[in-house]
Each structure stands twice: as C-alpha cells, then as structure tokens.
Amino acid sequence: METGRDIFVTLSEMHPRYREASLYDRFFKHTEILTLLKKWKHEPEVKISEIGHSCLGKSVSLVKTGTGPVKVLFWSQMHGDEPTGTMALFDLLNFLFAGSDAFGDIRESILENCTLYLVPMVNPDGAGAFTRRNYQQIDVNRDFHAQQSPEGRLLRSVRDMIEPHFGFNLHDQSIRWSAGNSGNPATVSLLAPAADEPASLTPGRKEAMQVCSVMNATLQQLLPGHIGRFDDTYEPRAFGDNFQSLGTKTILVESGGLVNDPERQVSRKLIFTAFISALHAIATRSYTAEPLENYFTIVPNKPLHVSLLLKNCRIDAENAWYRADLGLVAELDFAEPGKFPGLLYRVEDIGDLSGYAGYETVDATGLTFIPIRPPKLQEPADLILQEGNETILSIENGRITVKTGRLTN
Image (cartoon, rainbow, N blue to C red):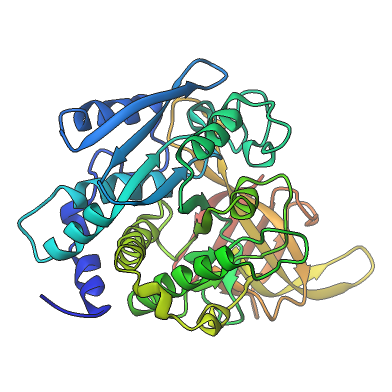
C-alpha cells in the first residue's frame, strides 16, 4: 500500500467508484435521502434512527457506523441550499463498505478506532424549497440558544446525547470567496471555529486546527491554491462555535466554487477525500504531530470573485462618460416552476475592480457598451456589448440572451 498522504491523491482519482450516483446535482430532496437510507438499512454494520422531524413533519435521521472509542459527528444541510456535504457523506459511506481495493488499512483503522454519526439533512424543508432557512424562516445555524426551530432543537439534543469528540459542520459558501489574493476561487474553505469572543486557542480548538492542517495538506495536493480559511469571528448563536465551547473539537468545511463546476462536483470529490484523510488522522492520532503554525498558512478567504467581470467599460452618462469595471454575480433563477433553474445576473460592484477575479471575464476595451438601463448595485444587469455590429454579450433583465466566445475563464 502507498504510504503517507500520497495515497489520498490515488483515493481522489478513484472517487467515481464511491460516488453516490443518485445524487448528481444540488437539487435533490428529502425523498432521495429516504431512498438511500432505506438501502443502507440492509447493511448490518450501519444503524439508522429517526431523531426528530422538521416543521413540516419530515423525518431527520442519524446514521451510525464504526465501533471505535472516538466519536465523530458530521452534520450537513442546516441550510437547505447547501447540499455538497450531503453528497460527500453518502460517498463516504460507499467508501467505508466498498472493500476489495487498496484502502483496506485506512478503512479498517477508521471503523475500528472511531464511531461515526452522520446527520445528512438537518433541514429537509429548506432543502425542498432550496432555501437557506427552514419553514419558519429561521436560520437554523443562528438558533443554538433560542431553540425555536425543531431542527435546531434536535441537532443540539444529538450533540448532548452523543457528546462527540470531533464534529464536522458542513456548508456551501458563496462563489464570491477567493483563496486570499491568489486569483483562485476558494473551492474548499476550512475553519476551527472560535469558542469564545476573543477567539482563544483552547486545547480543543488547537486539535481542530491540527485536523484542518491535515485536510489542507491533502487538498493542496489535489487542487493547489484553491483552499481558504474561513473567517473566525465568533458567532455566539451558531452551532459550530458553541459545539467548540462545549468540548467537541469542531471543524467547519465550506464547499465553494470552481470554473465550469456549477454543481460543485469537484468540491464534492475534494471534501470526500479530505474527510477520509481527517478520519484516518483522527483514528491514528497522527494529527497530533501537526505543527499549529501550519493552520495559519491556510490563506484567509477574501470576497474577490464575481461570476462575470466586465473590464474597462466605457459608460455614457447624461453629461459625460466614464470608464469602469462591472462585477456581476449570478444567482439561481427559479422563475419557471418545474424547470431546472437558470441564472440571474445582478450588479455586485462598479468601479476599479482591479483586485477582483471573474469566473468569466470580458475586456471591453474597444467594445461598445450599451446600457439598456443604467447599471445599479444589487439590481439585475441590463446591457449589451458590441464589437462593430456584432453583439458579444447581451443581458436582459439579468438573463443572458447572447454570449459569444469572447468571454474567457
């Protein structure tokens, strides 16, 4: 067997073998999760229990496997529109019970030294509507103390019941986040959340930082320069921060964007691999050898990415003209019920955006910029870019109607 972290590069390359094929985009619902859980009920080493219900009465389930003394809790989709972690958790289950491959020692180490607890969909009502909040319009991840959402109550009760040693809090982040000033999107971001207002380096938080360092080392081999460190400002209402203060060594994992990966299947593969790297390090306690300073080499996230960057636009105003860059951010457009959502582009920023990067970029130097209406912040874009008589780009009320090869990734 390969040794060291290189084996996780091989594991990443073999991800298609473990990828849960029934979860192929971001828009799966509670019914798909129930179907998968029904399949796993036939595996004797996997125990599935119903731990509560959402506002609309949908079941929330807990998956348990492994026999080891170290208890590890994963929870995903507190925010219903953040599903990448859920996909990766079912990939992880497939890996743990695949057999007949080169990773038997890793698999055995994890299952013998750890007991894993997975809550794959905390907020099924939010997932059904593909929204951040639950049916009450409460942000479940700001309900640790108030306990007004059934989803928040059940997640807190699960932690109190299990008292996990480690916790993995799984989210999706905005495509706006960049890996520092690298010009790359933060395709994965990691964080050992603060346990208090001064962000003290408590013993548990230090261990969470060491696990983050292990994950970062693996991820940097897979997609160098695309890994960021999430903001550690203490949020007293959030679950991750409070779990950290209660003694669960908590790691936040945020799945982010990448060019030509709208369904975040690359970040899915990355965090799947990082989960196994982290679990192996926890099972063998090899993470304890990580120097703490390695955590701080993970570059901080910065909001420097936009979906479409239009550079050097000459914009004619009533009495004069000016030159500016336009940064547009694409949001999902559910305007036509029953159809796969499109994209709606809104104006995020105007001016000198020289520090920004775009998933797609157009240099409008020498092009004619025709505003159907003047660009306004946070409103849908309405514009045409032309080269001579040829339309390079046309956006009408936020929706792209013409787009040519002049755009670059």
